[in-house]
Length: 490
Image (tube, rainbow, N blue to C red; front, side, top):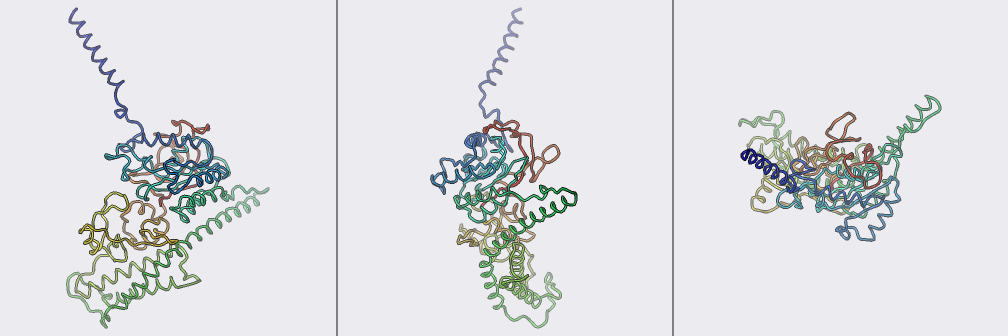
């Protein structure tokens, strides 16, 4: 009897210890809201506070940012402007450090810590919490794009009117970034412009519906086409002076080339076989490439004029090919094998094809191998940072990879089939939306059931879904379709 009571007492004691441990266990032992092993709890709590401030349409700026690019008068004016912009429009300006992942290194607020959510998903997180359909914009403030600086906006709605939010974001970032005041004013000036939809035009007969619908669709295409042409012309005009400088520099190098031999000799050194090409052929080719680039830049009108981003890329590609030909000519004259067409020097593509790789961390990003020329490799080995090629747009000079829309044709032309070392730029080279550092995929809800990768719209489920969020705006917490918008780093 005594033994049985002892065993029962021991079992009760063990159960009590387990229960006590569950009660007093620290919150960190039962993590919630994790992403890839790192928590989002701090970011989620902060976004809850932001959503409470956005219960009504308008603009809210984190108090720590007032005076850092936006003074109190700017905030008051922008709040009034946002409140009367159709949408309704809700805009938040927040520091990137407030929405970084928990548990990333020793300092969660470090500029190297990735954001808790992808850039476009941050906007969706606000919408989920407010619970009211409309246009949501989020300006994330940081020292650089690599550290999380971005501007994104999306309209969530099931019924008309639908607004051209994507065009408003593009125009605002392209015209005014990183001037926060001007950028937000430019966005709000266009955020209330309705999208043209030919399907809304109905006729009394089937023929009338087809004619009017086709006309509306055609008008939509015309409006979109005009905007794209304006955008392309801005890119071309902005980069024309920089490309003119490169053509002049290449022309001088070509003029300084020694006279080519009269006939292409057949190299006998293994690896030097260059039949039908040789120094004379490559010299003619480099002359043609530079002249073609000059012709496109100098043309003032007609089909030859450089007016679009793709035409800018075509000119840059010719300059890149010309630089490779000069390296090949130099190798042949020295009796060496023609080098492979490697990626250009990361710091300055004008240095020509790279010869090696070195580890480098651009503007707050993490270390990664970058292709470099011999001269830049020596500078890095000596502890010095080589000067980066800068492009000047609207009087502001930045590294060529830090201009987003203006960077794409320049990077595409020089890198061509090579991957670019800055992940953010590589992801946006062909128009794909940028992702925050450390985020491997951007998920959205597809028309079926389940998660899918890539862009998209519609309702979703899973961790962090609107069905599990508190609504701060008094509306429904079920996510509507994402109609228009995008997120841009700058």
